[in-house]
Image 1: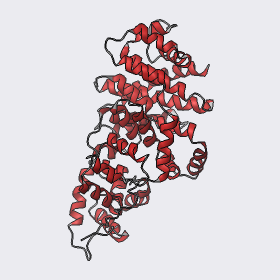
Image 2: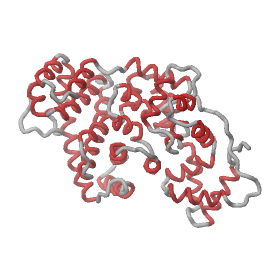
Image 3: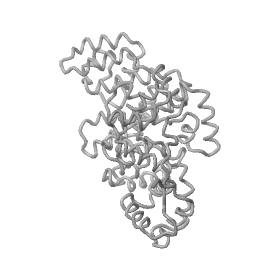
Image 4: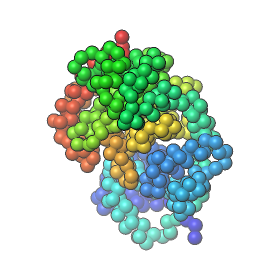
Length: 427
């Protein structure tokens, strides 16, 4: 028999169950109940939480949907053999299940770990209630809205990878590439050349002598770092027409997240730390796309944010998607490495949700932690900054076992590097 969605009384019963068993206190449970609106119940995110789909596969489906006027997310997922029909049905059930949303809110608040919560929920559901707990199977919101399709179409039109960058990345993938030819191609793009030289001479690369020519930059940096530099410089050059203070503020935050990602990856002994840097640098690229190409929507988003709604929730309400969706979609269009695309999609995702998902790359976990560090309240004093760092260390100890002293040392290095870098872009 089809099942109906849990009623408010059933959530109340679960709250009573949790409080009675001294698992959470009543006030915390009430706050979690009020926070249900924070839970992202779009079908792709529900499927991701349940392990039915990967972040990269979501972008494959969105690519098809941008041209499809009436194709459902689940329909395309089954057609591509990404999800089974029963997985789609289960995701649609959960999408309408208020009890599921309440459980996710408990997890986001860190009140109960996912494993413990599911065990408790099983015991709760097995109790003898006066009436059965049922779920509806209605395909509501399963079809991506027209507003999202319009956004995706606009991105694919306005943001193709610059020709010079696409050519350079193709060349740098060849282990036998002619570096003189690489330098020549870079030199054809004045904006890219200027950005590349600025980044080369910044504290990010710590070169012993100043780099004044592209040929020298190419020679001393090496192909792996050059690939990272080319992408970074191209992104900064592409979006340089933003209002100057916004441009500088955005890239300062991006550089800070990039350097934190690199520091954390290096501490954890991860290979290819430059990939972590790139993932951190590009994690929020969707925000700058919104700022540059959706000015009318930005005004409405900012109005909602001034009213107290979190920025990402405001973006979803106005655009139908948030900066993470937009950024990961854009990076997938540019065919950047899957780990970089996934890190962008999950950079702002609740940490405890991240731990529930399967197939999550080390880059996504490290960047998520780096973003948590960077997202300290503005204008906080040194004491507040220390409290924030200490809390992040505690929250992420299952991802990177690091102590406060190490993080404090990293913080000093990161701030010094970012400060020096921003001097280059403030002149």
